[in-house]
Amino acid sequence: MLKGFFNVPPPQNEPVLNYGPRSVERAALKAALNEARAKKIDIPMYIGGKEVFTGKKLEIRPPHDHKHVLATFSEGDASHVTAAIDAALAAKADWEDLPWEQRAAIFLKAAELLAGPYRSKVNAATMLGQSKNAYQAEIDAACELIDFLRFNVEYMTEIYKQQPPISGKGVWNRVEQRPLEGFVFALTPFNFTAIAGNLPTSAAMMGNVVVWKPAYTQIYAANVLMQVFIEAGMPAGVINLIYVDGPVAGDVIFNHPDFAGIHFTGSTKVFQNIWQTIGTNIHKYKTYPRIVGETGGKDFVLAHPSANADVVSTALVRGAFEYQGQKCSAASRAYVPASLWPAVKANMKRDITSFKIGPVEDFENFINAVITEASFDKLASYIDAAKADENVEIVAGGGYDKTKGWFVEPTVLRVDDPYYVTMCEELFGPVLTIYVYEDGKFDEILDIVDKTSIYALTGSIISQDRYAIARATHHLRNAAGNFYINDKPTGAVVGQQPFGGARGSGTDDKAGSMINLLRWVSPRTIKETFDPPKDYRYPFLAKEI
Image (cartoon, rainbow, N blue to C red; front, side, top):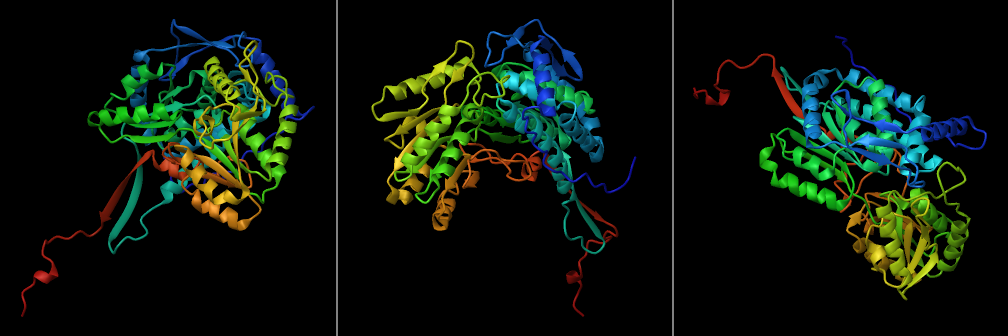
């Protein structure tokens, strides 16, 4: 065995390629898109290092072109969940005994594969399967996931370096970070390929074994990630990728005595149900499971009367409508002072009118489709209700069409009631609701912003008045786990802005930070005494002379 205190390569954020006309990366991505569309693949589950196919095939279709079949995948049942748990537990001893630098090398190699030979493939898969444009796919499936892998390796070493600062005379105190006793369940969302990759790998990096269930609408790119992990040297059984209906998987996993933790991103309702189930079954487990989850938001932009109207409108159109508003950080409610509203409104209408909407294969399209017909129908119902409400103004958009794909126009609503339904409920789509307030009521608006939603994920203050910035930053300290000053509330970067919120938005364990990795280890303190006592008697027991 090698011996040494090893330094990992210093992590740096992966540069974002621009995919401009006639660029090398644009040509490579176009070729990858054409190749993916030209064939229909059959995607297996990966259990214990084996590709597992079943007789039940479900189709994957691009949200922006729902008549085209990209792939089929094999849906599993309870037996496959059990097989994945068994495979994980069988791999556990060898994986957790593997020296940390050997684990690190796997994930650093995965990052390089994503940065190089797999970049176009994983971006194309994300574009086609999740209807992301080239830029949104690049910052997600390539750059953010690469950053997660590189920075998490660095954080892992920092955790291992943390040791007791004092060892008394003749004593050596030390701490080791053990993997959790059991397996971790990674339940990942559709909207970010990077999250789908980070949730299982962050736990595995710390020596844990994982059962990974992605959203069905993300399987097309998840399959590419699994190929990357395997090529990077991930041993069989360390991460097991299954496609099983959520309640079926949960019934097996949350009743298993070796269930040790869940790493989750998804809806608040699902997470609350999972937490309740874990609580009900707590007596069945060998250890108290770690529960880590990020569950969405109703994210705000608050403009102060001193704000620049161009800054406000740009933050709103980017923050609300990039990736069709299907980001848990997306701006979906805004508060604009009356003095600024005419200019902000004009700017937004101008910009939204210039948006091109259509399939991701056309790089001129800024807006693509929402993820499913169910999402489309939900958004259409809220838009229709707003159209029928005399207290709501349709400032922009309001249209939708499912003929070719699940296309919903970027829609801006202005409401008279700051507690109107679309100011409070998470829609997860391209709908932004704005309340216009009187300039002199900024302090009142701070209270409204803080109390309107159950969520507390992201938010921003836009102002040129430092006193107003300071008041908002303090007053809204519990309203957002990621708070932005003079910027949109989206676009957190690994290594720069650790991401997560509290209240109804989750456990705030900050993906992309050491905080998150600490949840996947169980510390053991070791005290070694070199010259131990050989007599129980202490000096104070001696008889007075």
